[in-house]
Figure (spheres, rainbow, N blue to C red):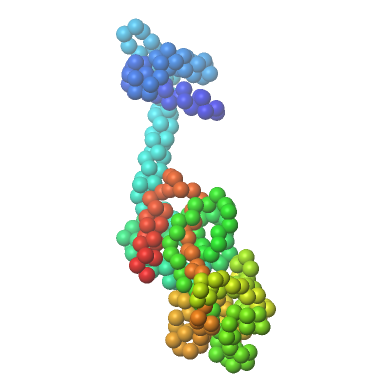
Length: 298
């Protein structure tokens, strides 16, 4: 069945319900003659008359009365679908799909979103824990939490936070490889490389005068998981660059120490990514606001 036929069926049902071509014309902003022509074409396609027309009124034929039942059901389903979709857009219902790393999920997503989920029992969370950058459209993802330098794309990036980052290493590693005193010493050391970085073997530091300098380390280990970078650093396999907040406990326990504290690293920018800015359902908008507010507090 063609779309034009569905349109003619809808007009027939409206005319039958209203009992007037003029009323439907005013309601739908369609010329009366166009409505009459559409129903005449529908009757021609079906091969039978649906309406009795006189100068005073219209009435259904026997075939028209039977056909009207199906046409009304079609309109009812269409209206119901529209109303249900409008409710989904305006209310916090359905599945909210988010991708993030394990650490981001532990530290931000779960603490931030748990109250939102508890307050809205019809909202469900689908959390994809992954350090890889999944395609949002292909994987039907609402929000992706990403950090660092973003590649040019059609995605919309909403800033969430700037995270201080430190260079750290295990005391056992430094005891075996001499603690670096300046950035040039780093060139003699091994790094635990986070492979999603554009230059995973580089460390860019800023000196006391605000001058950026870059060291290139040899490869000690490499991984695409930031959580594994932390664990490998604790094991003493090399120097690592990690968010300060991520290594707070290891620093407090003496499992890791800060290397070259007289230098600083550029803060890591954290973003919430969506595939588009406009026409986001309420569940996505609520999650974005919740994440932004939570990150601003912590």
